[in-house]
Image: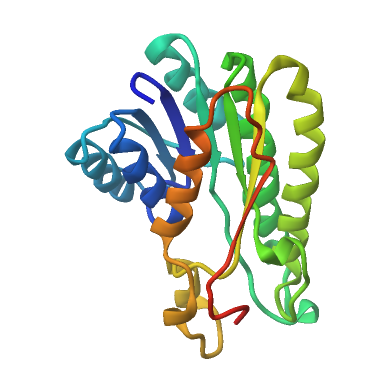
Amino acid sequence: MTERVVVITGAGRGIGRATAEAFAQHGTHVVVAARSQAELAATAEAVRAGGGEATSVPCDVTAEPHVKRLVTAAAGITGRIDIVVCNAGVAAVAPFTQLTMTDWEQTLRVTLTGTFLVCKHAVAHMQSGGQLFTLGSIAGRSGFPHWSAYSAAKFGVLGFSEAIRAELRQRGIRVTAVIPGAVNTPLWDTVPGEWSRANMLQPADVARAIVRAAAEPPHVSVDEIVLGHIAGVL
């Protein structure tokens, strides 16, 4: 993976940061994007400490000019983008009758529209053998009470991934949907209820799976990666 350019959104913490650190171990140039500049700086420092190169680009994936700026910065490093990990996402968890329009629209805009915008602009700079990773969820396969907005967004991510996979196949660009169960990330800090964090995947578990798939030869398409904790669904 040496000299590859990898773009990761939502890279300030959780799965995004863990994935940036995992790619760093292969000497990759990681372009990390998130809204928090402080978190971005910490991730970039971790990437460099792990042996990779890092470029930080503050970015709100719901704003198309931000996404264009991110893609331009990444493509300017070597003239191409090799791997994209669309990890940015949020969750509003409440009975659907209590969700505000702001909650609903923000969940879909960040999680689904953000994925669309990043993929749309990144593929112009990708060549055969490139790879797009989209972050789905088990909630994108099964609906859970109080997770309606998140499930709608993640179902959308998986449908979008399947459609663009078919569109990009002739160009040799692969699309891998990553579908984890519950992952112990800061998302859970604000979710109501009692949850067994010990029975969740760790961000590094998801990151390892992404890096393994990215190491496959260009003719191998890993369409989906489904990950779960041995304890089962929470």
